[in-house]
Image (cartoon, rainbow, N blue to C red):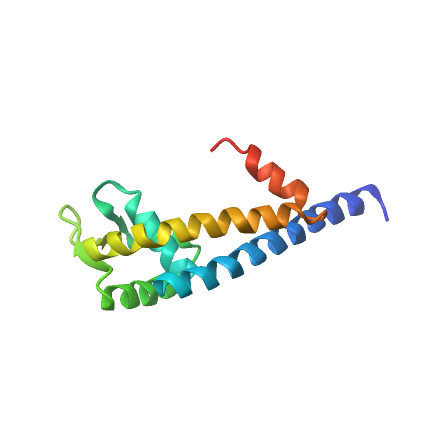
Length: 147
């Protein structure tokens, strides 16, 4: 294997490690959020992203980027959350073609109930991952990020 091949393999191994950490954390979050709040991880992510916005709303394209979903998958997700009364859609006042997705009071309330479960589960999953030699360096690196 040449130097270039070694560099590619190092990056590929890093990617596999990141995917393994993400997968294990997401599985724990999915179980905990479903059990406590009847929310999936991506549904929680939508509510959380909207709650962080001034006025609790975002354009659909922004929401798709925040959730790493396609436009059509985001639309289906918003439809489900809207049917549950957690979101609403409103027309943009200055661009009638634009549609905002907005968090409702019920959506904010459910998010506030789910957040402690999310945060405790995330902390626990990261602690468990840190005890695994193959994941420990990545977990430590996450803790050192200044975002």
